[in-house]
Image (cartoon, rainbow over all chains, first blue to last red; front, side, top):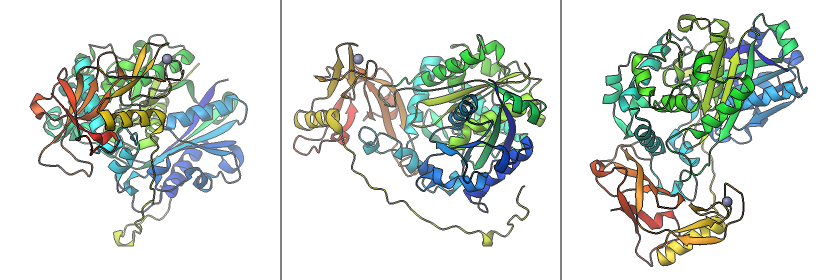
Length: 383
Length: 155
Ligand SMILES: [Zn+2]
C-alpha cells in the first residue's frame, strides 16, 4: 500500500524565537499542516509521531510533553529518539500495518533556548574513551573533513563553493534563516574552527517546527489533488565508535540509500533523482553524502561542483532550499525539513527556488556530530 | 502566523534560566577494566582479538561487532601508531580561542581494527597523515586508569 504526504507545515526558520515556547512553535506548525491537508486532528488523525531527544530540550521524558499542542491528547502518540526521517518511516509503517489511516509526524528545534550547545554535543561522546579528553566537539568534524578531502580529491575550494551555493539558494527561500551573499573566497578566509573546517563551513543553528500529515493511498487521493508518495525509506547506523567507523565515506548514508532505492525501484539514482535535499550540516558532508548516495561519481564531484551541476536549473539541483547551511541547522528536525522541501518541489510550490517539474526527489539526513547515523526518503508524484 | 497577537515589545519577553543536575559514574566494563588496568600498570595498549573474524579491536570490547561472538583474547598492540587524519582545533571546549591550537588525530596500528582518537604533540604544520607516533603516558605511579593516562601521541 502506498503512503502519501498530504499536508506540510513549516514554521519559517529563525535564529531566535524569544516570544514563543517550543510547544507554541509545534502548535503553529501543526496548525499549518492541518490546514494544508484539510484534516481535523481531533477526528481524522489516527496516530502521532514526534522526534526528539531530551538533552536538546532541556527536560526529561520529552514524549510526555507532546500530546496537547498537536491535538493528540488521549490518542496514540509516541516519540522516536532520532531524526525526522526515522519518524517518517515509523509513521509510514503504522499506516501500512493498518493501525491508522492518517498519521502525523513532527520534529522541531528550539535550540536557541540551549545555552550550552557544544556541551550537549560533547555529552553525546563516548564517556569513557572520548569525552574525558575534552576539546570542542567539532574536532570530530575537522578530522572527518581532513580524512574525506584526502580520500576524495574534493578540496576546500569545492566545499567553499557548496557554502556559497546553499547560502545563495536560501536568499530566495522565505523559510530560510541564513541566506546571504557569500563568496567561496569569504568561506576560505573565514576563521578556522578545526582546520580544515572553517567558520563558514558550519551550518548555523536555527529554530523551527515541521509537521507532516501522511495518509493511506485511498485516503490521500481524497485529501489531496496531487499527493506526494513516499516511494522508499531507509535508515542505517555505522559503528558508533569513533575509532572503528569509516572516516572517509558516509557508509551509513550508502546503506540507507540502498534500502530506500530498492523499495523505490531506483537503479541509477544519478539519472532518476531530479531534486535532492541532502545533509549539509558541514560543507564537506554535501559532497560526501552525494557520493555515498550514488548521486555523484567518486573522483568527479569537485569538478561537478565547480561546473555548477548541483545548482538550481542544472540537471540535479542539490539543496535548492539552501539546506542546513542556508536555512539553518535544526538538529533532529533536519531530516523532516529536507522532506518538506522536497514535497514542495514535487508539488511545484517552491517559489523562486522551484526546480523544473521534478517527479522524483530525495531527502537524506545525518544526525550530526558525533553520530554515524543517517536516513533517506525517496519521494515521487504521479503514478 | 496562526497566533493573532505577536509580541513586539522585547521587554515583555520572558524566560528563566535553569540547569539540569545530572552527575554519573561511567562504568568501564569488563573490556575497559582490562584495558585501563593494563595501561595503568604496564603502560601497554591492549586490543581484543576475534579468532573467527581475524579482527583485533581497539578499543577492546568483550564482543565482536561483526559476528557478535564473545572476545577474551587480549593482545598488546605492536609498533608505532600511524596518523590517518589530523585537525588543528582553534576553538576550545567553551568556544574560546586559546593562544596555541590543539592538534587531534585518528591513530591506527598495523593489524588493528580501529585505533584511538587522541591529541598529537607536534607543531600544526608538521601534523600530517602518515606520521609515525607513540603514546606518551603519565609517569608510572601517577596513572589513574582512564584514557587521560595517555597524555598525547608524539613521534
Ligand atoms: Zn568476530
